[in-house]
Length: 156
Length: 156
Image (cartoon, rainbow over all chains, first blue to last red; front, side, top):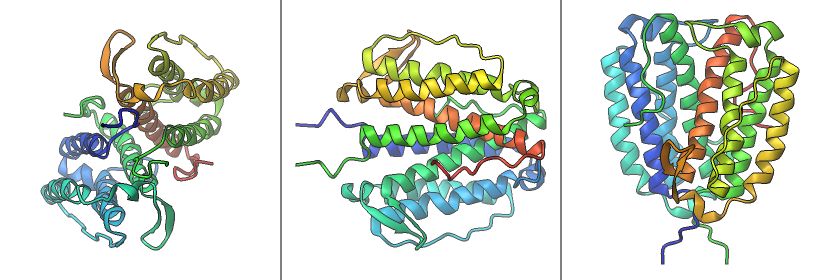
């Protein structure tokens, strides 16, 4: 009998994350090439740098939670096309790696990248929240450039 | 026997949310009074307006998921002290209401406020994500004012 008292399923959480990643992809697309890599407010990082940080977290964290092996990603995309290509590759890889996460790993404590100790779900939520947080920063960049950002609520 | 294969417990999700709410509270405190209610970039809403929106979502959504009764909150704080007072009251109320959520309501579909159809967990994650999203916007406001925002990673 399926347990209907669960908060969220692994599949539901992946879909939630990929929905956010689709919004972030539209953000990357919305930036003009130059501003994507150079525009800043208040000394903060350009959106391409933030999006690259998201890439260094998504698949590496899912892989670490799945396998206990914490290996980074040092991609340094230099163009919007390159960034979008890496983004799309990570979308496919995240789907693939996610299916290999043993269910007990969400609540199991591990040390991510030899530095951050916490449960698997803590690490995954950190990656998702970090993406939403920095993407919110990107919304201000776009608005201040007079560009309409993609809708936050549309996860399609 | 406890199920160790769950992604997150109701208690774990509440603690995650309240951790984010503690960061947002520090954001409210970090804004000077005038800028909290008036400062904007790119025509976006002032941080007090965004924080007030968060208040209209947090407890009302938790209450709706708990009870199926969708009633709003039309508080309109006019000072930082008033906003912080409402914030703290919502912190206590969220803890209280959360304990009354029947476990099956997280996966049950309902129509929030007569308008948005989805599962309880979808609505709750929407409220949390909306808070992170708009708070990220607030980080840019503070940085552009030359004010160091609270650390994103510190949920204490």
